[in-house]
Image 1 (cartoon, rainbow, N blue to C red):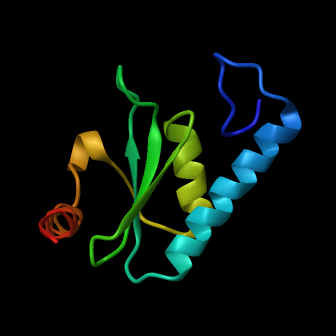
Image 2 (image 1 turned 90 degrees about the vertical axis):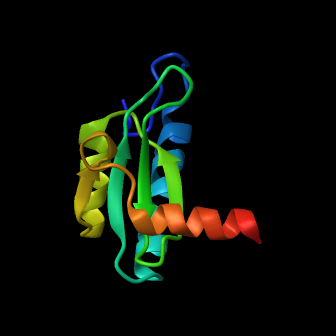
Image 3 (image 1 turned 60 degrees about the vertical axis):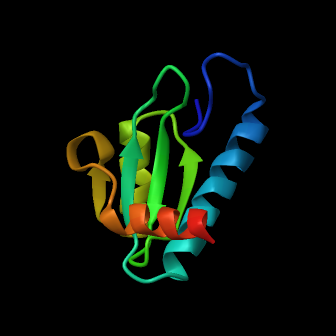
Length: 105
C-alpha cells in the first residue's frame, strides 16, 4: 500500500502514488518557502482522518491527510523538519494567533 492509501476504498495504485507525490511536493514547497516550519501529527478522530500539519514561524499553516504517525514522521524527516505530536505538545501558539487574526479580518 502507498503512503497515503486508504484501507476503506480500493484506489488504483497509480492514483495512490500520484496523491502521495502531490502531498510530498506541497509539503516540501510550503517548508521551503516559509521560515521556521515545524511538523505536527494530528491523530485520527471520529470526524477527521489523521493528518500532517506544517506550521511556519508566523503561524501560517497547511494540513494534509496521512495514514498514520509513522508516515507523518517519514514525510517530516524527508523534508528535514522538527516533528511533534499534537496530543503531546498541543497546537503552537503562533498558529492560534494566526487563526485568530484571520478570523478578525
